[in-house]
Length: 207
Image (cartoon, rainbow, N blue to C red):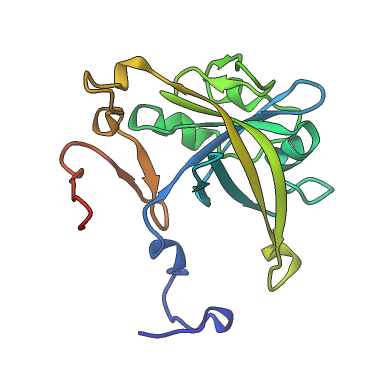
């Protein structure tokens, strides 16, 4: 099949685009506003973009607040910091719960029955139940124009200035045991994938 996204002429029950860029890592982003209220939300438009310095990005669509911004985006642009927590099989239900839309004065870490713990270098909280935390300093935002105002997205870039890894997931050889962590990723529709010992495989680069 062939279709043009702007014409929406794919003829399928749902837009297939999200089922083609897969699997997508989940940026489980924690932040806080100027009053200290915690925000937590999963973003599947998320990835690493560079090594030195280590840099990550995520993007969010238009929010429901009066200013049209997602709480995460507003908090990060205001405070200049955030934490990316790794979502795993064990935290999948609470990760999903943190995706619900609530007012900005709701502490979504508490709402999701998770535990907020202090970071080392930033004021934004970490999620105790996550095995990995990336403490990030806000770098810049890039607006992605939409076909309509409701389709607009904003990309947030952050430099990773501190990394926490649960020692239980570091092997005797000093490698991160991703299969043991059971990291999850986003597919299309309401589907997810899990990295485990059955799905993991290794290939050496040629040359």
